[in-house]
Amino acid sequence: MHSLGAKRSAAARALVEHVRRRGKLLISDTTLRDGEQMPGVSFLPEEKVVLAEALEKAGIHSIDAGFAASSDSDFEALRLIAAAAGNMVVMSLSRALQSDIDAAARALASRAPNARGISIFLGTSPTHRQYKLRKSPDDIVRMIEDSVAYAAERFRIVAFAPEDASRTELDFLCRCYDAAISAGATTIAFPDTVGILTPKSAAAFVRSIRERVTLLDRALLAVHFHNDLGLAVANSLAAVAEGADIVQCTLGGLGERAGNAALEEVALALHLHREEFGRESPVHLEQLTELCLLASRLSGIAPPPTKPVYGANIFATEAGVHQDGILKNADTYLPYPPEIVGRRDPVRVAIGKHTGLSGLTYRLELLGITLDEISTNLLLSRIKKMRRPADADDDETLRALAHEIGLTCAAKGEK
Image (cartoon, rainbow, N blue to C red; front, top):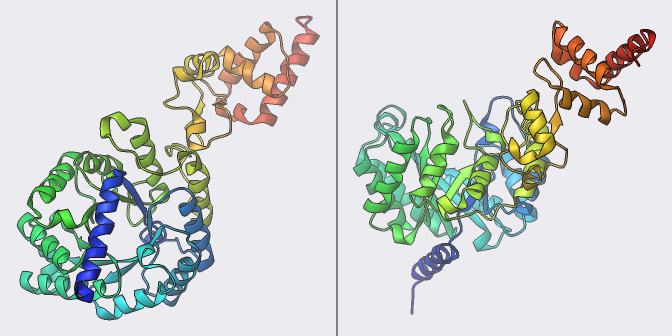
């Protein structure tokens, strides 16, 4: 007869094998935890529930929903999400402390074993060992073994993340991973905590981990990239190409410093280049725009106009050549159809100093204004001579300018 520990281990391994058999790349969202660490962002527990439900609806595999031991607010949010988050896996962050693990278990107690988990983090780099933790490498390994084993008695899904992994000696990093898996971890994570890697170095790390962690057949490999060099999405894709099982992201790239890999960008890139990567995520792309805008409203962080997927300018153009091409066939200058990501608004033809005749005519038609070709050219010339031609992009300003040109032409007998 198997011991209880053996039964838990068998159940955990079956879960890992099930995920691998499906062949899907899993997207894990950490907007509610790492995204909330962005200065100025603070979600109410009820707001976290709203976001969690929207993430579940969009096909997200798991969410890093908070840090149960960090505050009453996080504990309450996790408790509420546990009751409302459908079938996705809800995770709580935890230090390598029994008290943190117990708090996570209490917060997520209402969820089924396969729908709740814990993510234990511990610094492993020389800098963290020496200055933050003041522990030897052997001390760190013992802390990993003890905390993961303790968590595995309470959770079927246990992730271990070596904080500052990208600045940890590779031999020691792999030793930590093997220790975690041996103690019961079902996922090992590779976090680029300070966002220093390039796609080439990120790929090399993932390749080495897959080659050198002897027990990796018993656990999934997740990656977590920060965006300090603007490379978090590129690094995530490089890791996928090398066989990572899970990519952890945030909506809109929210997070500390320069943020995290943006979920919507990773998911869209995987879809548009599915032949290159050979794997697609279960994310429902048509919900991405609405999902990101929801996160923007609740976080209070407005996206820059150039933000991929849901920024105001992604499907807008001011250049006359581009406007003419798009009006003839949108595929000429669009990377993908807007409806793929749930954009229902038409391509926006902006007015400015680069605008052409066809673009201006189109905008006038949208306003219900008809001018002959001479008047339209005069209006275009007037706009280009403005101190700030982009001011004419405002509908009321454009309407007033068109009316003025129309009256002038009529007075001169040109209309």
